[in-house]
Length: 103
Image (cartoon, rainbow, N blue to C red; front, side, top):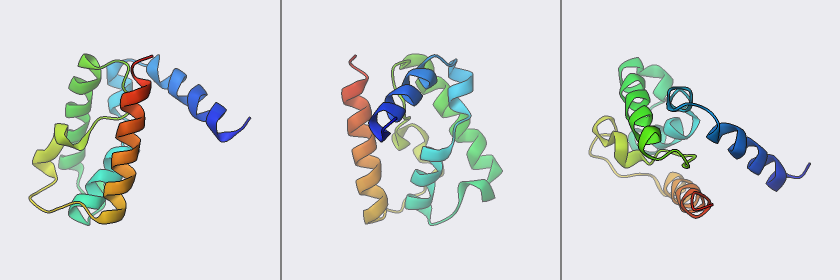
Protein backbone atom coordinates (compact mmCIF):
# COMPACT_ATOMS: atom_id res chain seq x y z
CA UNK A 1 0.00 0.00 0.00
CA UNK A 2 1.46 3.37 -0.99
CA UNK A 3 1.27 6.54 1.11
CA UNK A 4 -1.72 7.92 -0.78
CA UNK A 5 -3.74 4.74 -0.33
CA UNK A 6 -2.84 4.64 3.36
CA UNK A 7 -3.93 8.27 3.81
CA UNK A 8 -7.31 7.64 2.20
CA UNK A 9 -7.82 4.48 4.23
CA UNK A 10 -6.98 6.36 7.45
CA UNK A 11 -9.23 9.24 6.44
CA UNK A 12 -12.15 6.91 5.70
CA UNK A 13 -11.74 5.17 9.07
CA UNK A 14 -11.43 8.48 10.89
CA UNK A 15 -14.60 9.88 9.33
CA UNK A 16 -16.55 6.89 10.66
CA UNK A 17 -15.70 7.87 14.23
CA UNK A 18 -17.97 9.88 16.49
CA UNK A 19 -17.13 13.55 17.14
CA UNK A 20 -16.17 12.51 20.68
CA UNK A 21 -13.61 10.02 19.37
CA UNK A 22 -12.30 12.44 16.74
CA UNK A 23 -11.85 15.21 19.29
CA UNK A 24 -9.34 13.18 21.30
CA UNK A 25 -6.86 13.06 18.43
CA UNK A 26 -4.41 15.84 19.26
CA UNK A 27 -1.54 15.35 16.80
CA UNK A 28 -2.46 18.20 14.46
CA UNK A 29 -3.56 20.39 17.36
CA UNK A 30 -0.22 19.70 19.03
CA UNK A 31 1.60 20.83 15.90
CA UNK A 32 -0.49 24.00 15.80
CA UNK A 33 0.07 24.64 19.51
CA UNK A 34 3.85 24.20 19.21
CA UNK A 35 3.95 26.39 16.09
CA UNK A 36 2.11 29.26 17.77
CA UNK A 37 3.35 29.06 21.37
CA UNK A 38 6.71 27.30 21.16
CA UNK A 39 5.50 24.89 23.86
CA UNK A 40 4.34 21.30 23.76
CA UNK A 41 0.62 20.70 24.23
CA UNK A 42 1.25 17.67 26.45
CA UNK A 43 2.81 20.07 28.98
CA UNK A 44 -0.46 22.02 29.37
CA UNK A 45 -3.37 19.75 30.27
CA UNK A 46 -5.78 22.67 30.68
CA UNK A 47 -5.14 23.86 27.13
CA UNK A 48 -5.50 20.30 25.83
CA UNK A 49 -8.96 20.12 27.45
CA UNK A 50 -9.99 23.37 25.74
CA UNK A 51 -8.81 21.99 22.39
CA UNK A 52 -10.63 18.67 22.84
CA UNK A 53 -13.86 20.56 23.58
CA UNK A 54 -13.38 22.87 20.57
CA UNK A 55 -12.63 19.91 18.30
CA UNK A 56 -15.72 18.03 19.52
CA UNK A 57 -17.91 21.01 18.65
CA UNK A 58 -16.17 21.46 15.30
CA UNK A 59 -16.41 17.81 14.25
CA UNK A 60 -20.08 17.73 15.28
CA UNK A 61 -20.77 20.59 12.85
CA UNK A 62 -18.28 19.39 10.20
CA UNK A 63 -18.38 15.58 10.08
CA UNK A 64 -16.46 15.32 6.79
CA UNK A 65 -13.44 17.21 8.08
CA UNK A 66 -10.22 15.48 9.09
CA UNK A 67 -8.53 18.43 10.81
CA UNK A 68 -9.91 21.10 13.12
CA UNK A 69 -8.45 24.50 12.21
CA UNK A 70 -6.55 26.32 14.95
CA UNK A 71 -8.97 29.24 14.73
CA UNK A 72 -11.41 27.04 16.66
CA UNK A 73 -9.14 27.07 19.74
CA UNK A 74 -7.30 30.35 19.26
CA UNK A 75 -7.92 31.28 22.90
CA UNK A 76 -5.13 28.91 23.98
CA UNK A 77 -2.68 29.85 21.21
CA UNK A 78 -1.88 33.29 22.60
CA UNK A 79 -1.17 36.43 20.64
CA UNK A 80 2.00 35.23 18.95
CA UNK A 81 2.41 34.41 15.29
CA UNK A 82 2.81 30.96 13.86
CA UNK A 83 6.37 30.02 12.93
CA UNK A 84 7.07 29.72 9.19
CA UNK A 85 7.51 25.96 9.02
CA UNK A 86 4.40 25.29 11.08
CA UNK A 87 2.42 27.74 8.98
CA UNK A 88 3.24 25.93 5.73
CA UNK A 89 2.35 22.51 7.14
CA UNK A 90 -0.87 23.73 8.75
CA UNK A 91 -1.92 25.64 5.63
CA UNK A 92 -1.28 22.67 3.33
CA UNK A 93 -3.10 20.20 5.57
CA UNK A 94 -6.14 22.47 5.93
CA UNK A 95 -6.30 23.18 2.20
CA UNK A 96 -6.13 19.46 1.38
CA UNK A 97 -8.75 18.70 4.02
CA UNK A 98 -11.01 21.41 2.62
CA UNK A 99 -10.78 19.92 -0.87
CA UNK A 100 -11.36 16.34 0.23
CA UNK A 101 -14.28 17.22 2.52
CA UNK A 102 -16.36 17.91 -0.58
CA UNK A 103 -16.49 14.22 -1.47
